[in-house]
Amino acid sequence: MKNAMLLLEDDLTARDLLLRVINSALSGMEHNVYIAENGNEASNIIKHHGEKIVLFTTDVIHPGTDTLELIKEAKNKNSQIKIILLTGSVAVDKEYDSLVDFTLTKPFSNESLSEFIHSIFF
Image (cartoon, rainbow, N blue to C red; front, side, top):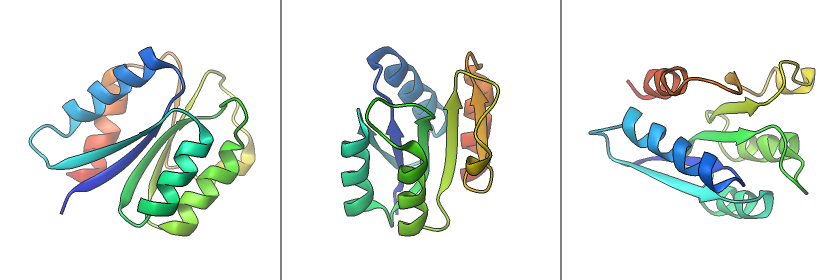
């Protein structure tokens, strides 16, 4: 069975970098990455594939998106899903604490993200 991940990133450069890190971390493992450019796309993917998604990587802030509600939606669809939250600020709202498995503050190293992804699957 393929492991499925959801990557929500509106910036093309950042999205490409994150996708390379994910693919590198899971090299040799069969996996599928759903890519969303905005909250509406992510919500649609969660509705249709949420049970299969084991990892959801997202920024805290996306224009026109309530990221906290989106994370809750993903958790409601699959309570075992792991959440990686990317943030440009050190302080993240306390509401995220019980929902997020790993927070990375930008700029972060590719190695730190890769290590966390690897730890989920191996």
